[in-house]
Image (tube, rainbow, N blue to C red; front, top):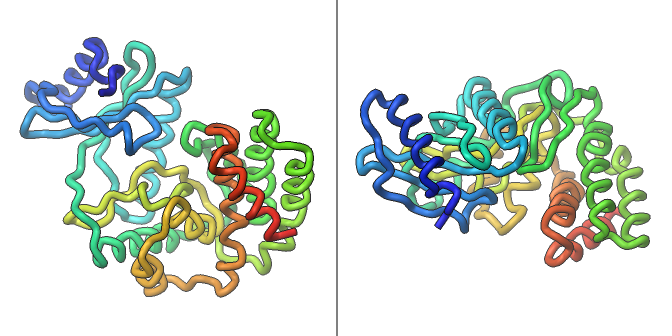
Length: 298
C-alpha cells in the first residue's frame, strides 16, 4: 500500500481538507491503492459516501507541480469544455505534497467510450491559439517543460521540447556517441520534416490513453501538460504505450481532419517521449524505440 498516503500526518491533513470541503466530517475508511496505474503514489479513499483521488509527491517542488496540473485542468475545462475532475485540495504535508481530486466512477471501455476519447481530444484541438507554448511554464510528468512562446511550431518542438529532453538524456549517460550524433542530426532536420505549417491549437500535452477516464458521463481528462501547438503532437501520443481502436481516430475525424502526412511524422513526435523515458527510467525498453524512430528520419 502507499505508505506516504497512509501515514498518520498525511491522512489527517487529507481528512481535514475533505471535511472542510464537504462541510461535514469525513474519514478515510476505505482505500484502493493505485500504485500500478500512476507514476506517483496514489489511491482512491472514501468514507463510504464520498470518494477522493489522492496522489503524493516527495519532490521539493511537488506542490508547484500539482498547482500547474490544476491550472492545466482548469485551462482545458474552461477553454475546451471537456470533463475534468473536481479539485479538492493541493496540500503541503509531511514529506511532500498531496493533490486531492474528487474521484470519478470509471466504466469499462467499449466502442462508445473509445469514441468519447477521440471526441474529447478534438474538442481540445478546436481551441485555436496564436503562438506555440503558454504564458506559464509546465511539467511533463515530473520533468520541467519550457513553454516560452514561439510563433513557429517546428522551432518550438525542436528548441522547447526535443533539445531539453535530448540534453537530459545525454546527461544521464545512457546515450553513446553514435546515438548522440544521430539525434543531433534528427533535431537539425525538424523544420524540414514538419512540412507545411498547420493551425496552432490547445494541446493536452500528454494525451496517451491512460490520461482519460471513461465514465457514464463521457471521457474525463486528467494529467495534462497543457500548452498550444500542433494537434499532431497529441495524436501521436494517444497510442504511444499500446494500440487503440480505430474508433478513437474515426470520432476525432468527425470533428477535425487529420493531415495525410501525419502517419509519416508520428514517430518524430514520439522521439520526445522516448528521450524523456531514457533520461528518467533508463535505456531498457526505450533505447531500441528511440533509435528506430531516429533512423526513420535520417
